[in-house]
Length: 593
Ligand SMILES: [Ca+2]
Image (cartoon, rainbow, N blue to C red; front, side, top):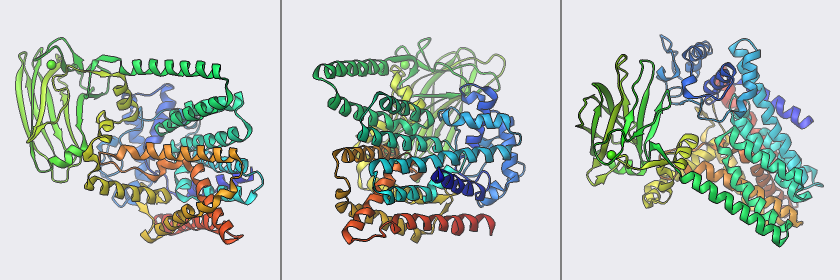
């Protein structure tokens, strides 16, 4: 209890010192909570309220949001987030319908009960900090479960977790990371407890419940699914009879088969490789008319306040090859009545847009675009222009985007329907279809790409330890050398840590913790393969407890090797110094002097 209160106090200190809105995406998480309070149901992008965004923007201005980030408050104040021109808010996208709702339930209640936007945000930060303190407590309990007689070891794990400055910073902001991190810590505790005391029904139930709840708090929580599957399979092998194992294997096989069939089931109204965006739901693929084959893309008739567009993104490892080249988009379009559409080729730096008049007959169109020299993405967007009265649906077929050596678009004639799993990965993970292809593409592993991943990894390691504000306040470069050396030291110290794991259940428990860390790292790092995407160190925090145990254990190993009683100085005093240095030397110095 004392550990929890100390950690909560420490989190609240961070929550107080960091000015309002100066944590990554805080306005968007607050917006989610407030909208949830207002609507009282699952949100869709159509629920986004300009009135609420305007209110948040006024609070941002009042709290020097742009000044703290090195800019100046825009005048006049933008009306919505997407109208801002800074490098933070305008690029943050939206959390609404992008993140699952579990974290926001209590913040929504806060929004409903407490008056005043500032007071609400502070209360939400306090709630986050309590979740963060829960991580520290669970870390201590996990280590105590692993080493019942080694109090110093469990205290060192708790202290490492408590002082990890980036975890304290993120844990003390309005952000759904806080709940996912707590879920990850609870999972680690359950794994160790089950390994030591056996998997009773209630522990298995806890394991399954956490596995369901984690992806509901943040998408990264998906790592729990394979982890729990492996734990269950291994446990079942040890506990069940031959007959029971066969039944279990049949049941699991049947379930996997059913899921596979469901995942591959086609959705006729959606086109493979084409994404559908907008303020309402609509079918993007139709057999009503086609220029070739049976199917074409379609955009619905719109009223003036509605938006709808179709998008296909080209894999980014192809984009690097295209830099400086001219590419040509060709397509056929028509509409039942005269209507207008807007076609855009966007490479992230420059875009070429063309307005197209649609006529009742299929007409070809063409658009040329020179890819910018520093482009790192490429996408084609088709939007219909709301014409008000008498607007009608538009149809598009035989789309082709050609570069010197071939075709860049997939499913240009729209004959292939989307499979359900593509909708899931695109809708839930926000990962385009080609992401999984990028993993197997040799160009994802050429020298330039490997160099890029090396850089990404270094940055991820850095902001795992500390990068505050909107990731705008890093530590000085030399300060990252210390945790890097301490991490290397811990890795070496593992050579002598084996003596601390005499029991088979201890080694099994530690294997599960290691697997948790590996799976979280995989979920965080794999999406960078084949595209320009910088992972963030804080995404690794659902594995904070396993990482703390691994780190501290390495230094305990040094304690054995050197017969050194004060081995804990490195993991505990090291993170404590980093914490104090971050708070005073970086955060307080930036915001208050
Ligand atoms: Ca077609």
